[in-house]
Picture 1 (spheres, rainbow, N blue to C red):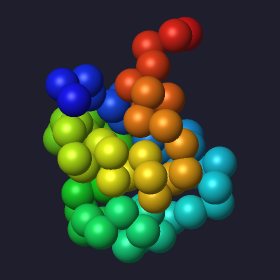
Picture 2 (cartoon, one colour):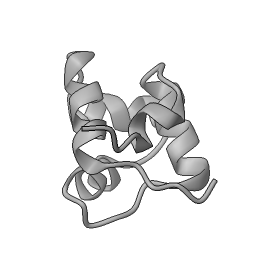
Picture 3 (cartoon, rainbow, N blue to C red):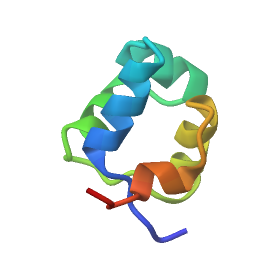
Picture 4 (cartoon, rainbow, N blue to C red):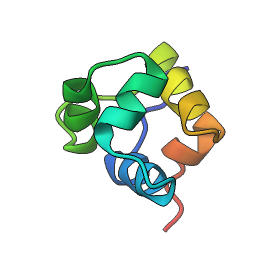
Length: 69
């Protein structure tokens, strides 16, 4: 998967679940720093990491890459 998640969508879905960055990191098996960098736009979320974060958030990966306004 070459698509990249939009940082703000990752934040919105995480916040909608009532999760902290640490909660998401634990569920997705990544570090809290990784989540922070993704949400800040400093690190692209793609490929297996995108799939893992989407699964942790219980949403399809396509939701996180959707560029519909």
